[in-house]
Length: 129
Image (cartoon, rainbow, N blue to C red; front, side):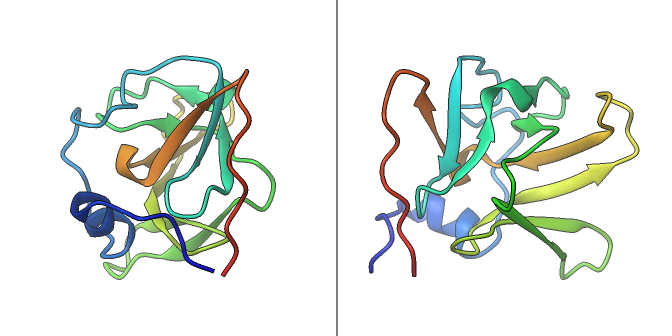
């Protein structure tokens, strides 16, 4: 199967593990009810109920759907990278211990890595490798 087509900016973030500039993403200051899915494979990642304003310039979530994301050590050896568990798309980084929510977790995600599906719309089918 073939994954969704990506723009060059999306490829830079998703495939080359880039980072979009802070406060530039379409979902940074976005609060509607629905689901955020992986832009590359449509895997459901986060409920809008888990999104919160961390003031960091990127969409932030304190919970993901079960088995939706995986965590790996970033090449810098300091941070934890967040990836789509289905296709390995780079989503962003995980931060713990900031006390921004009761869960004390921030999945800091690039808007270019995700897509929003409103609660009254059917999400596209997940594309598996």
